[in-house]
Amino acid sequence: MTGLAWPGRGRWRLHPVVRAGALVVAAGGAALSVAGVREQGAQLTPRVDPPAGARLLTDGVYRFSRHPVYAGLLLGGAGFAVLRRRREPLVAWAALAAVLHAKTAAEEQALRARFGAAYVEYAARTPRLLGLPASAR
Image (cartoon, rainbow, N blue to C red; front, side):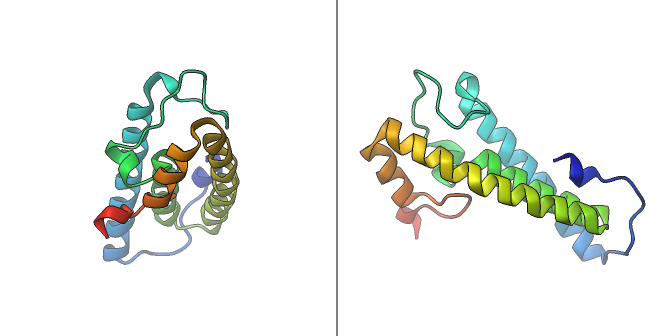
């Protein structure tokens, strides 16, 4: 995440439409991450395994994403990296995407082990990062 704030001045100009789009994506990603964190509440953890007593979240933003915090970080980070107008933040964003891809796979394995069929059913109808639930398609 800190690589997104790589120091230095921008190296290219952004068209005003691209700048506006990047701002919207960055703000939307931040809002999505915050919403996911708020819904997690006290069960939020940086670890892969859900904490003891955790419940499977399937409503709110978790209806549109199995990992809304990560989806928001990726969206927000992409918008911010574009706004930085440097190559290094874009590379840092790609590294963040790779790390979060690996972490989501490990978390999903732990969630399947913890919640069994309930998680399998949830995963079948809800996109990993972002999209419409299967019931709305």
